[in-house]
Image 1 (cartoon, rainbow, N blue to C red):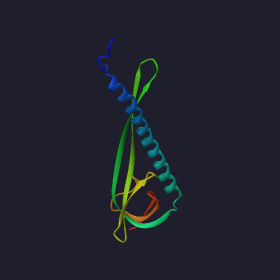
Image 2 (image 1 turned 60 degrees about the horizontal axis):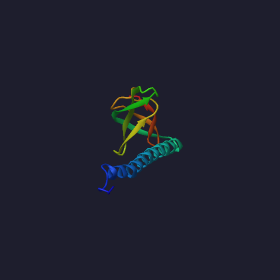
Image 3 (image 1 turned 90 degrees about the horizontal axis):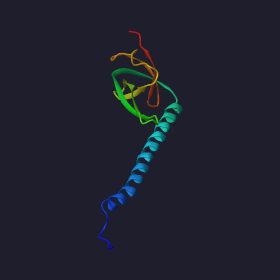
Image 4 (image 1 turned 30 degrees about the vertical axis):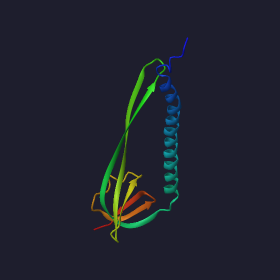
Length: 135
């Protein structure tokens, strides 16, 4: 039998076997890097000393993130679960006019109102307390 040239899909098959593993490794590396960066950010914020600053609450916002997970139970049935997580942020304005947004890690979002002035305890990128001034 004579060779009539490459068989159909032969070139595509070798392409898939070389590119797909690279893509899987890249996606895996991105996930690992994000996890490490998130952990490093947490450690940095947790190890930063708290400071008390006089400030005014000038803005509040929510960031809702949705997640979808699919689980294969082995019997061919695929179970999909949806979840979401809401992150709350409070923006403070300081006496010098500077503004900075902080992640609310102590559930202060519902306790402060835009326009409140007082002393905020901040720790890195987190707001951990707010004591409203009288008056």
